[in-house]
Length: 180
Image (cartoon, rainbow, N blue to C red; front, side, top):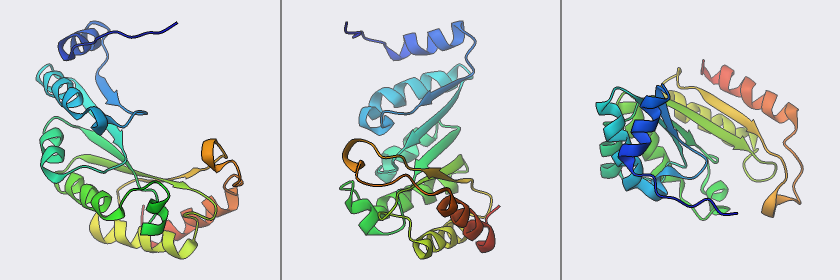
C-alpha cells in the first residue's frame, strides 16, 4: 500500500497548530534536498510562532543557508569526520560542511554536531582530536558534540560496530581539548 499525498506548506503549519505542536523538525531525509518546501514551511511556521529545527549533512551554499536560518531556531549537522578521506566514502566534501558550521554559529542559531564514529573510516583518535580543536577554535567550547556508535548496515556490513571504548576515548579527547 502506497501513501502518497500532497501536503502544502500552509496545511503542514495548520496541522502543527491544530495539534499544539510547538516545534517543526526536518530530519531523516536530507532537508536541503527539498529546500524550497522546507523554506516555505519554516517561513510560515515562524510567522505563526512555531519553532523550526533541522538535521542536515551541512552541504549547503551560503546564500540559501542564510535565508533558511532567518526562520530557524536550531540545527544539527552531521560531521562525518575531519579529513577529506572520511568524506570520500560518501562522495562529499569536508570544507563546505565546515563553512556551514561557521555560518550557523555566526548567525547565533542553536547548533549541535553529530559525529558517527565508523571503524577504519573516521575513528582515528588524532583526527578526532583535530576535529575537537577546530570546533573549539571556530565554534566555541559550548557547541554540543555527539559521538554516535556505528552498527553494520547496508554497504558497510563488513565493518564491526564501533567499540564503546573508542567512543569513550573520543569523549575524553573532547574534554581534554576543552569542549564542555
